Image (cartoon, rainbow, N blue to C red; front, side):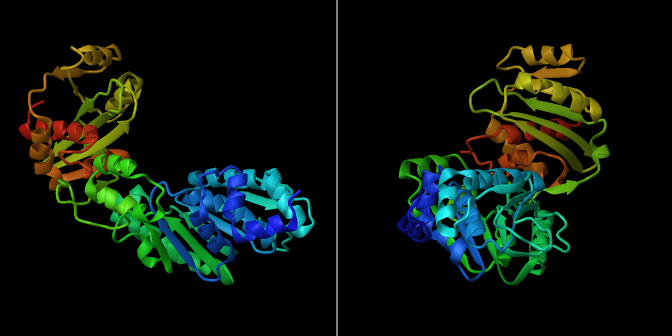
Length: 413
């Protein structure tokens, strides 16, 4: 059983509670963050670099808030409904821990129990609401919140890669964020956690921003930072670790991609696969069709061996009638072509002789302003292209897209 002095220490240094319930990486800095989330009296935005344990802090702060303020409900929001479940599970585990039960018994004289739990809400025996609302409710940012109200509204990573790639997505996130002002009770708070992705993202609307870049926290070693810096485009490293937006001097594709919902524009096009056979490479797959001076592309990306992707690849090529399916035979001596044909696909293998950098900077760059991506293209596929430089750690998507552009540019397939 925790003593009164132990409870007092947790209230002053909540990172202690975090370590006791399993978040062993939490430091005094994290304790400051948790303390502000639980005891602050203003809206609060925590903008910290990737891997700073922001969500771990939140998984401690929410249960602590629920115990200390049992008459105040919480609404927690992430990008989508699917993303909410992870945090709800972490909160439930903290509430069910022996440490949290001891803390509640000592602090409130009550044996803490969860009375209702699902992927989108949690209620404890401390909560008594005449409105019938749960003590903690989890939602995707795009969910309907009409009629909802809360004392504490928390957003966690509602800005992500999609906001970097799409102005429409950025505007939609801002619209939904504005609506949160209507659901907090008078005297309530909004807390925001996340990492910036674009200079015009939703953080431009968030108040009281506290920034902690990779140099401020001391959580990432100099060696690891150098490794991260070399693995991505300078602009992406600056945004995600230095919390600033810069123009990448060596970025090739800086213009935001354009999208269409019309999948029929791909019909009677071609397909290409850049196959991975292990290691850190990705299997990139591209459907493409040229219509006049516009090339329509649809891309998929898997961090898997090509063999594990072939069923889906052939199915997509069939669905959108994009044949032949081109594949390079330099490394596999025609093996992939035979595997595609064994699945009743029409494959064409070729021997690549052109330097990859020249191919990408010639064909994909030439057509970039005239390319329209079909919605459903993997965000990671687009991310690889936007982050492509001659020093990029991964170029599989850019290579596949460039091969399609080269074939369509020549007009013979």
